[in-house]
Length: 252
Image (tube, rainbow, N blue to C red; front, side, top):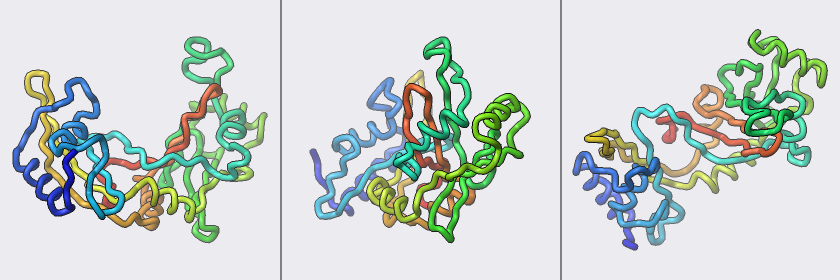
């Protein structure tokens, strides 16, 4: 595997950008943008060989995509309660769309992607409690969409319609340390994608070098709605709680 100094890697990325559109070297692979760039650099998957440069990663994105990027997984506190599985799913969950088909008829779901800017149609939102130094999940029954009236009646019968008690949360210090290990310094490359005769071609147009994760940036993203918290649990399996990012916001 080829090794680079940081300056050599920057030069190599600029040379790749200057080639214009390059054919996908991993046909049929949805990770083609990143895989093709790794092949062009002669490196193994997401493993930047930069001697004495600390932990660096290579992150790629398709320009113009609306897909969310997963930053890291982290279950909320109090973790001893296994809050998603033991509280949110049984008390605030709803029948899974494939209950009685792929899963048992009793299968429940709690899938919500929430942020700090607006409440979801089921009344959930992220709140940044800076006085307590934590990010909390909040529920407001008054904001639930009328489409979910039957579900809300069930919630009222099971637990009432007040605020979550206790409220699940993440400490800002915990988030900083988690992100510090998962969001190491990276070369962030965005590519324009073009189809030619059913083949993908990539133009690695934007290249940035990012370092020094900012907890203030994460908090601002929660406030402004471009950092989101994604719950994805069903009765049979909790797929994990994720902090996610809208496109084009890695630098912030």
